[in-house]
Length: 266
Ligand code: URA
Image (cartoon, rainbow, N blue to C red; front, side):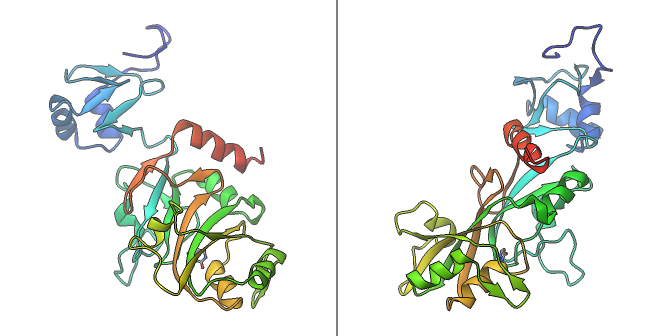
């Protein structure tokens, strides 16, 4: 069953249904049902036999194509946040919150790294890795985030220059932003305005590395353009792809490696 380890080297092989239950995929009985229904694969191979064993250190287990891991291994997830959800794991006011969109029961301790406003859509990273999250949230992380904003009117050259020089908001100066006008033919249009860019409006792309409250909206407002809709499509090295609005996926091994290397300043 194991991909690489020889019989002698194996670290405590575990019954597959026990592994699934421990990883939070389902109860022990529910895990057996998942297996007999042919929904569980180990290293890409469907396993229906209830006595089968796995080695959690090397075997890749999926349920319906989604990887399942033991909870003590840090998990990294990206959510394509829809509008209307507050970035919190619980809201005393009972508003819809992002917690309802991610597998928090499967991965206890999962929390969002930073926040997006309730009406902002796009990439939001979640992890159970407190140390990595602290490094990612530290001001010294300074990794670019790209936002696409739908604004009234269109930005003048002078407005773009001001943003690119670095404007000052009421809580202090902003670092210079990278700004670009986004054409109607860009694939980013549908993420922000699925019915196309409304008349009298335009899309602007902004890359910043800070994360102050309502920063993009305030920066654009400062140069005379109210934001109508805002979407984030990158976060450091992570790019929002292969995730529909309201859905999540685990980072690939490569994405995880690059993200963690960034937090260590590599
Ligand atoms: N800037 C904003 O104004 N809002 C967000 O949600 C994120 C960045």
